[in-house]
Image (cartoon, rainbow, N blue to C red; front, top):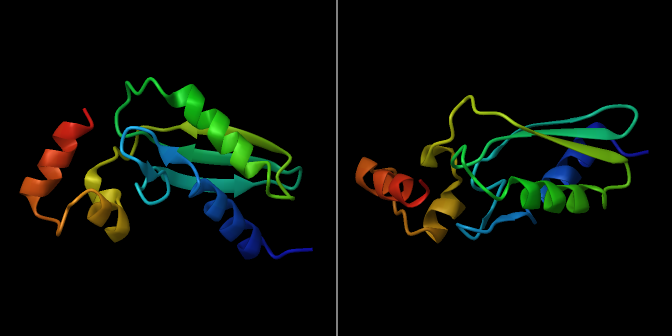
Length: 119
């Protein structure tokens, strides 16, 4: 039997395979995943947000997340819940995601350019 930390790391690794189709970066490095909970029945709840509340790709993202997480042995079912607080901002991205999008530092000018791109 695996330890909870091992399972959570496996879940995060699988979530990192889910790429935001508009930005071409995975949802983990974009900072869209806010929480993960796996109960004793194998139901995995993913609390996440999107770069914009009007994103038309929620169904596709749910399908991809479900497909990825069902590869984790301990996950029997997946529930994705979209939350809007805290509001996503480019500051939630990892350094790797910022580099991939050409953001060299956290200057407000570069962050505002990205913010304009994802509206």
